Length: 356
Image (tube, rainbow, N blue to C red; front, side):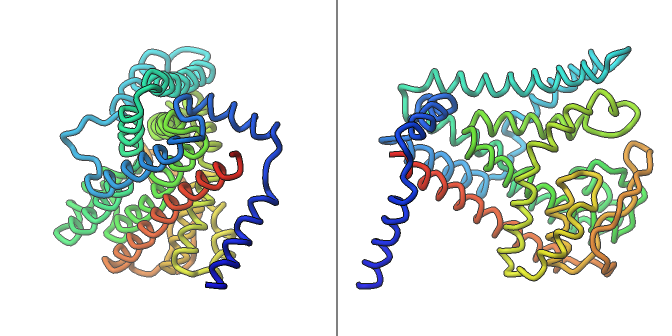
């Protein structure tokens, strides 16, 4: 009992030491009113946010992305494709591509914010909307299912493995070896742990569900037009740079969560060394973390749209990858995912405690 009482005292003392001034509380309130117009960080606000976070995450955990259910990212893709078809021609492609990217991101954020504002007096509808958005924006379960499917298909034949991995990677897969198919699947598992789980939750924490949806538009833009090919080099440059900025912190946080989840703190030096060994300023970090955990090698040259891109290697142990490695990598992803959900929930509670 004494130990519990002592812990309680120190915990309360910590909050008193970090109590915010009235001016700072007002600033937090203004930010909360801007991004969470129906949840002014008091009363039922935090419980509703946590319910939406938990419900959305559990829905993704159980359902993934059912093929029968329309997904907003499909709509994002159609908007981007239409804009690219209309604008990616003639002169001024850098400007036109930049305007398209910024406009679509702002449109998605504004639409989500407006819906939340319209629901501000209907708590149940609001929490239902937020839960659905969280569900749609998380892709942890679908990612794991797709990677498992690649390894199962590869067990049947190399052609089936190539066809299956083509569903989740942008590189050309028609000439990949079995080892390259497995490598591509595990690289995608690591990279999309950041893009599909940690980063959306990061932006949920900062900007609520409008920010979460806006991030998904950022990510979709990059996946469709953020390439350094002749067609997209100018038109997709702004979209790619926005994606780089949006993922800078989440990618590094993802790598840290992966390493912490396995208790491999001694491998942080490996992650720092190889994290920047990637054409993307962010993708290399979670890939380096998984390469450190599995003691394998990722990266190397790949073909995209018929063009060879000579990417540096991440790691040095070019050993054969197996289904056991896939199972281990899936475990890493799940631990990091749970850790991120808990981290977001704790931070929401702590900020609320500090500002009331």
